[in-house]
Image (cartoon, rainbow, N blue to C red; front, side, top):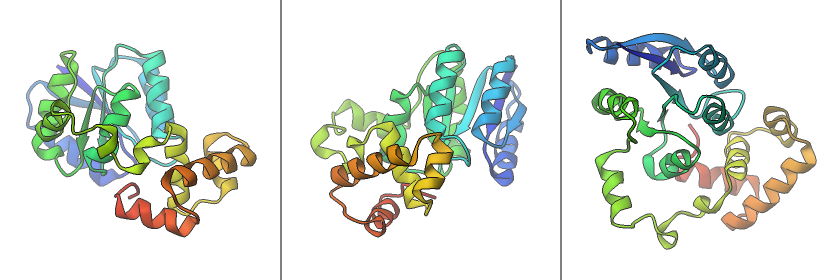
Length: 210
């Protein structure tokens, strides 16, 4: 029996994932977490075959949780589930240590197949993204501007675009306000933007925030 730990802050999403997996005889949702820290705490207890992780939950950054999990639990496959389109985040989370990526929109059709793939030691992306990667369509010249951001700059960008102040971002990421301000300056330069309003519009247009 494949024991699945689900981490998502939306009860309806967790219920929906349970329903999808309930039709599969060899899988069971054995635990749930409502934020990244809770997912990390439960993963440390052990006994899971796979963690299905929403990358954009309140609290600690999903990227930080993912990297910490891969350091502490290198044998636990993490399947990232996200509202964001694959071309926006999939490559980034795979580089951060995820074993696979599934959008919430495609979860009803892909979740079971993705879980089987990562539990068996493979990596999962949709056939469409796999084809794009195989043909080299992820080359730098074809990537959106935000693909040049570091993971931390990407996190700061998402938090800024969601309306958080520098002080609030500093608290969420456990950084100083001065450091966050430095990240803000760098990411605006990389994105060729000047104001927070422009950044918010860019994030919305590119589906980088919920």
